[in-house]
Length: 427
Image (cartoon, rainbow, N blue to C red):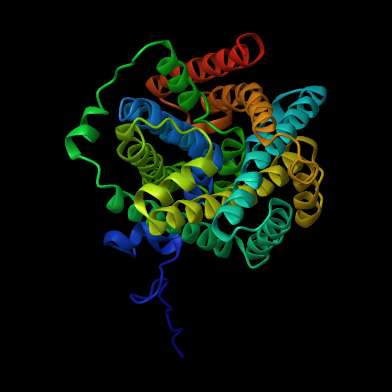
């Protein structure tokens, strides 16, 4: 009996990556198997820290710094593409490649700083999610923190069902944040001409330059760089250089879409703040003040949309940070602990801050200092490794890509050093 040939692709189902790479799928459906990793990494670009920065920028300077967000996202596309490419080319994540190419003491130091960075990131995300519950439901911060903890465990449970289930869950949460700010934009009714004027580069004094530095300097999140290379390293089996290049081309589409979505959310935050607060002469820096002001000026729908966006973004980004912690421990020192144990450990600092009534704003400032310190240790090795033909093979960076990578690294690291200086010596 002749053996029946089973097709790799059914027209009414999501195609497999193998079917796409073999040329069995045409049209838009070709990118479907590759969507997901970049959306998880993109969550780092819409965490509660971004909410505060964008609301402050929009309320104080109107649309002036909108172009900074656009520039930040263009940088993010390149950096995340380098991280994804490293995973595809080597079958290893960034911490694993670092462990193989650096000494053991260096790897241990890189692991320690990476863990500190992730805990600092989790601080802002956890407090942001708890604040969202407090604002939406008037739940006191301590019970809100406990509910946030339970919610983050529930999201991590998706990981037990497979990486695709987790990607789908996080992507759905990103869509919810998009819808929340779409509602706010509709209610705020910004003027198109004013929005377009914000795309022209410019500043209004030293303070606006400092705020722009904060936006740019906080754009690249170290844990997103570590994690993205892990999400692509085993996602699609590609043995030959030509096949790896095809995989990267599809993953790059995923990156562009995810970064456009993240950029649109950040732009929406600034545009709404400019249209609602700046036009009324209000300078808003605190998220709870922003929520109450939205309620007073635009009504409950706008305020609820803002609170939901904050809550969902905080929960999603916090869970992604936990996964990144798992990646850096396994990669740098070849050790592993249960995901729920890690989630519990990383929740201790924000829970302590909330329970003991420590000034959350000061805690967030210190978390940003730690983040600023850690970015160089992720970004510089990334550009270094992706520029090495021995490591990358045919997927090694083009010379122009390497030049852009080093230029962006120098810019971001310099800006973060400047932020550290401002924190210690100017305040």
